[in-house]
Image (cartoon, rainbow, N blue to C red; front, side, top):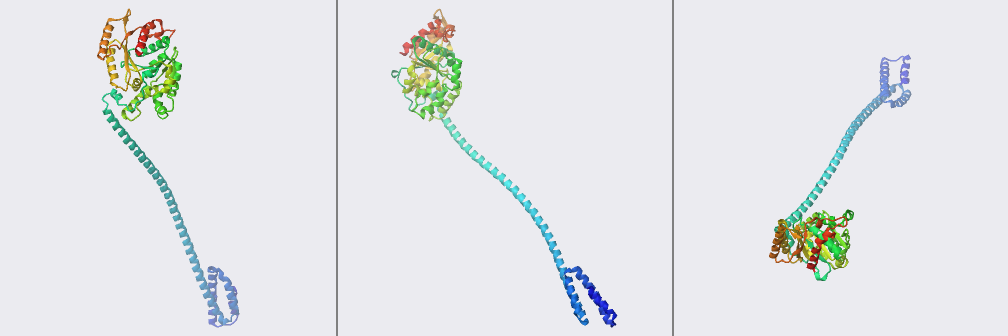
Length: 478
């Protein structure tokens, strides 16, 4: 471009016409404008301008103006193209910025959506957990509802069974379905005796212990005592603390018969019942060939459960025959009971499953009583109840043993009157001969032991009191 301007200026030394100079001036002005625009707007046009310059140099003067005009047109076109490209570039960058902003906005929205989805998934998981809990609750409620229906059915059955029971004793009179065999007295060696009175405090346990001690010590009879009273008085009298606590610790008490009997005997009839009884036998202190089956205070709860089960469902295992099932078993007779001449059941002054079990396998019932009016009046009630049980309970009244106050070997006057009233009562029951002639005085010598023996019947004075009773007892059982 500079060379082009120099050439135009160089022609000033030659005389030209006025139009030539005007044209030259316009050419210079246009060349300057075009060069400036081309250099600023379209830098890549500089090589092209160099080529135009060379073409201009080679072109004759009349045509140079046309070349210049064409060059200017080309520069204008190139400038327009450059402006258009710049505008498009700016628009493209603007679009990119806009799109980038929109993309960032969309990314933020997407991030928000992801957070929302995460929160919704957490809420969905929580709802699923709640739904699962509700389903579990529904299942549990359905199960509880089913159990409640079963309990209601059991309660209705219990109510129906209870409506058949007018009083507590009546349930024991239910007809028995296939009761166990009762081995007749003539086919066995051992004699079973229930010591029973439905009134407490009559000296029943005292008579049981001392009668058994006398029979064992002086008449060499094998004795087995069975404590049926959850108070455990009998066991406390005939065993020491160490031996008794050892049996308690190992659960070797009467309750085991009830707790294990059904599993051991019902499901495994090949097992010898002696294996169930043997661990329960505890040596009686101070006597030879004498044992006791102890009980604990838990016996009351076990008996209540047995009674409730039997009352609510007659189809349950009949709890009246457990003792008979065991003691009147040939294997038990041959292994255990052959060592004992007498088995004494020391019964509580109330009707319990244990008392019913004892009566169901006993030969005799011996009724101790005092001669006060309260005790005497209970004797006929006891006999009445025994008779009402029916033929399934074969035990018979062996007799009534009186424990009364004496003076010089004779009953005091008030006690003599009570004794005669008792005789009249027994006559009404057609049992005139069942009142023992031998009586046991209410005396410290009939109750208290000494340092030489743990039993009053083995002391010199005690022997005098219990010998007549023991001898009459043997006459009556034989």
